[in-house]
Length: 270
Image (cartoon, rainbow, N blue to C red; front, side, top):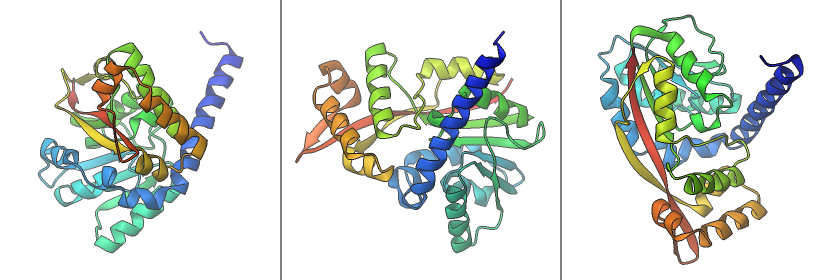
């Protein structure tokens, strides 16, 4: 059992990580409205297909950011509840909803580690490209299970790490240099264990693909300091051959890019 000082330290770490996320993404909210990585992509189509909504469902979009997933699902659901603890992100999403005249999305300030909803409240829970920022992803997964209805479904999209330890460590290093609020890209094997242990049925990712990221736009979106960008570029250029192959690291006209592994997990309640 943790001693009181250990519990306090853990709480303080979690609060610090939450503050980092709010600071980083609050400042960059406008850029995430127009970010092609977030506003577009085949995974939005795959999410809509996997959701298979009939128009009667109540949906929770966790860590909604600027609302891209919520807006994609809105035409097919009774209500979308879009939750995030970064207020500027929610404000940006609300502006988009008003502009598009989307009226069935309700925005709620809240933390995925302590969702402000009753048990068995939602037919579908979605979380897209956000879980690598959660300070306790196991707790988040259990919270999703708690608020899911007995026949509920979870759609999870996130970047994932290679299974090979050295390549995993390399990806985490450049991610943290780029954004200090980054916690971890989990391996597919780690995600499957976390989901299954929390009461979700899932055997394998429904989709595995890669998102090509060029260093300038990837770092500018989150306002990475110049010194950290230089370190990222050095690491990419000097990466071991196996890592370069796995992450498809390339350089064209002095612009470095790599491919970020990403997965879609479609889960049902066990």
